[in-house]
Structures are given as C-alpha cells and as structure tokens.
Length: 90
Image 1 (cartoon, rainbow, N blue to C red):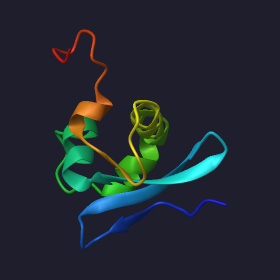
Image 2: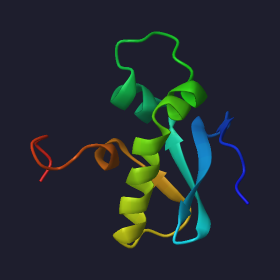
Image 3: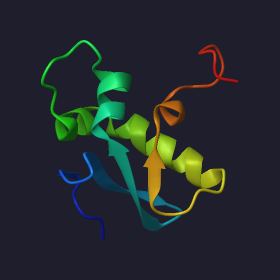
C-alpha cells in the first residue's frame, strides 16, 4: 500500500512513493528542483501541487534511476528529469 505524497518542510522536498516491480519505493524531490524543471517562471509555486501535476514524468525518472542501480530512497535531481539526447546532457 502506498502513502500519499507530502511536502516535508524540514528538508524542503516532496516525499512520495513509486511502484517499481510490484514494490513501493520511497523517493523525494527538492522544492527547488520542481520549480526549476517545471515552473521556472512562476512566483510562489506550491511544491506538492507541482509534483502532482507532473507525477507521471517524475515517477518515470525514479524508475529510470532504480533501473540504473539506485537504492531507496531515490533523491531526484534536475539531471534526472531531462532526457539526455538533445538537451546537452550526454
């Protein structure tokens, strides 16, 4: 059973769980990463709302990290949210 995502104020990140191979794994993404990747022109954006709006892309990034060998908890970075080809990240 998964837990709903929530904003963890002390760490400044959204914490959430992603189903990977039949198991829920914990992950987090910083408020700043959410802002820079998804809402750079917005002032006063809400991290939990931004996460919820982009959850499929964020969850896919967690799955990619796990497939590459990352262990729980997965902490996403801006780099994880960009497709490498054509974005200058190779």
